[in-house]
Structures are given as C-alpha cells and as structure tokens.
Image 1 (spheres, chains in turn cyan, red):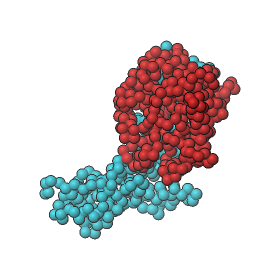
Image 2 (cartoon, each protein chain N blue to C red):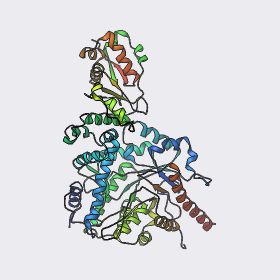
Image 3 (spheres, rainbow over the protein chains, first blue to last red):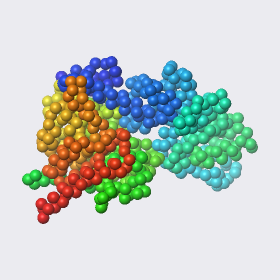
Image 4 (tube, helix red, strand yellow):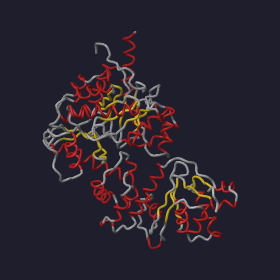
Length: 257
Length: 305
C-alpha cells in the first residue's frame, strides 16, 4: 500500500514522463489506457494554455511546430501557481535557446511582447495622469520630479521589428513573408490606459529614458543618464509618455538639489 | 415519486434555478442585453446566476475584474475553484488560499465550491483534477484541508464529486460514503455533478442510478450538468471523457430529473468550458434545466397545497 504522498509523487512523475511507468497503485483493467487520459489531459491542457497566452508565437510557427515546442516546455515547466494567465513567464528565454526555432530568430522577442501584453492586461487598475498635471508643478521643482510608471506599463526591447511582426500575425490571410531587411529594429512601450492593452514603437532614446524613470530616477537624472537632447527630444518623449497612459503618478522629492 | 422531498436546507444563497458559466466572450452580451438570459418562448429568464472560476480573476485589475464586478451587480455568483488541490497530501497553497479569500470578500459569491481531487504536487500545478484513493488517510487529509479553507474564508463550501477514469488499490471506501463522511465531519455541503456520476459509472462499471439513490441528497447545495465525449477502451468497453464541450447527454438529463424528483429544485449549472457555443445555444441548455426545476417547484407547491 502506498501512502497518499507516495501515490501522488509516483503519479505526478509519470504524468510528465511520457515513457515513465504506469503507476502500480491503479487497480482498474487497462490501467495504461486509463492513466493516459490524465497524461493527455495534463499535457494537452498546458499546451493549450500556452497557446492561449502566446497566440502570435503560435501563428508565426504554425500549429504543429508550436505544439512540439510547447510540449518540450510544459513537460519541464508546469505552472507554479494555479493561474494559467500567468503561465509562461520563462517561455521567451526558453525559445532563445530552442535549437529548432533558430530559423525564426525574433520568436523569443514576440513571446516577450505577448508576455508584456498579458501582464499589462491583468495589472492593477489606476487612472494614468495627463500631461496637464505638469503645470501644477513649480518649474524649479520639475527637474526633481519622479515619474511613477503606471502599473500596466511595460517595455520590450528588441533587435527585430517586433511591432511590425506582431501586427502581421493579426492579419493571417495575407500570410506574406515579411521582408525584415526593410524594417528597422523596434522597441515597444506597452500600456493599458483603461481596459484595452495598447502598444507602440519607441526609439532608443525614449526607451532609455523610460527605463531610467522606471528605476526611480528624477526627471533631471533620467535626462542626463541618456543620450537625450532636452530641447529637441524631451517634448516629444513626454508627449508619448503621457498620451499612452504610461505615467501613473508624479511625486516631488522633499529635498530638491 | 412518493415520500417527502429531501429538500436541502439553504446551503447557498443561489436561486434554485439554472445558471451558466461566465465567459469572457459573453460579458458584453450579458451586460448590454439582460433579456438575453431569457430563452425564446419562455416568459422569464432561465439564466438566473453565473459561475466564475476564481483562478481567472486572480490578477490585480483590468478587464476581468471590471466585468465581473458589473455582472455581480446584477446576478448572484457561484465561485467554483479548480486549483486549490484539496486532495493533495502536501499542505494547501497559502498564497492561493489568500487570493480566494480576497475574491470571496470582494465579490461575496452566493456559493463557493471546490473539487474532491488533487492538482498540485510540490508547487507544480498540473491543470487537471486528478483522482484520489478513498480511504481513512485521504479522508483525514481532505477533512483537514476543508476545515482550513472554511476557517480561512469564514464560510462553508461545497465539495464536488469527481469524474474518474480509474480506481486505486488503496481505496477501501466507496465514493458516496467518502463524500458523506467528509460533509458530516466538516459541515461542508456537496456539489453533485450528475455528468461526473454518469462518466465515472460508465468508466468504472458501476450503476449511476444506485450512486444517485445512495447520495446524501440533503447535503446537495448545487448541481452541475455538462456534456461528455464517448470513446472506447481497446477491449471495446465504453469509456467517457468529461469534456464539457457539448450539450448534456440524454442519460444525464434523466439522472438529473431523478435527483430533482426527490430533492425539489436545487441551483443547477450548465458547464460548457470548451468549444464554447454561441450564447443562444447555452441559454437553450439552461432553459431545459430551468424547466425541470420550475416544474418541480410547482409540484412541490401543489403537494404543500
């Protein structure tokens, strides 16, 4: 007789070891066929969950390839919480090193964009503040202001045109292979000003600036940390930040320098 | 017929009518056109409450909470967990229990239920309701876990009978005795999934009618109905998969009527979780369940009168 702990340990091990033994605790006839129902349910349902979470990755590589990739992943990586919407946080890193996916070098970054989109969808609520709120700040304190990013704001840095590729997956019938040589690399700012997730391409200067703000630097520090030209570039960067709903709050340091 | 109805006490705040699962695809329709909860030819709504899976609403904010809150303003809710792993030998996931508590406080569902199953082993969530051996050891573990859940949430829950594809050497109790004992010891109610009874009975070659006869009906707080897929084992014996992807089978409707005949109306859910149909198809299934519940209600009144 097995203790419940042993029984579940054996059962679980064989569920995700497709060549593993059928647990001996099973009494029913045709134990293997019966056990395989659970094995198939577990593997197929986790593959489906990953497909739900990474629809563009699936579109880009096709159903059969996606299933094969996902199967590799799910057999080694079951969710660590029973919430499927958060499943797959490490999938992009896995794709980086998954040899058969080498022919699609941008796949991992598309997965990162989809991960960021999903995190933004479920992020805490909060009304983004508008650019008009800058007028409430005395000009001499503006440099020391700290912009707190909205809970849904995410950055995806990529060496590939991820936004263009992602958009192409929404338009499947065209199915034209993209000429990537004609597209510059794109980094993306993901936001959720209300209920719908939005994202847009940002340049490297904006990316570095938002990254600096995300680290808690003041406006002045963020400006000096990057390659930003305050007179010519700052207005358009601020306009991007506020128009996309990326700023959740502004705080003023007590101790202006 | 004959004999007094074994009507359950008010174990939930759900109406003793039909409900359906809440789906992202249906949010707008439910909220914009509440009359859509009425089936053509019926004079009153047949979708009277909604079930939600708490695991889908455990993010911090955004659309899921926005829509659930709006549905909760108009309809009673049943919070039906699939991820608590009450039958796991290891301890319950405290973070998950806290998230359930948060949802329970925020949405104040009329009923809370979970499954007699396990799904997590050493923090690996397998996303399936896995089977348990029915014996004294499992009984103690399940009762401890239900005590913990009920104490943490500050309310009683309903425990659902499983759909099974196999049995264990380690089992020395039958499923009905086990469920009755859990309910007796912990004070929890039972959620009778009639399709699960039919699926398990077919797969394990026991009688669904006898199971229903023996089931402690005074403990039933909610009923589930769902569709299943008919397959066969390699020896040709019928084998059913609890797929929730189609209409409820006629055999299951007959069992449901058998239950309601002896209990009177009980809150009943149409479960349709995969290949989700257009809203009118789901409403038609709910209408069928609701007719059984309403006619039982009328029969009850006639008896009382």
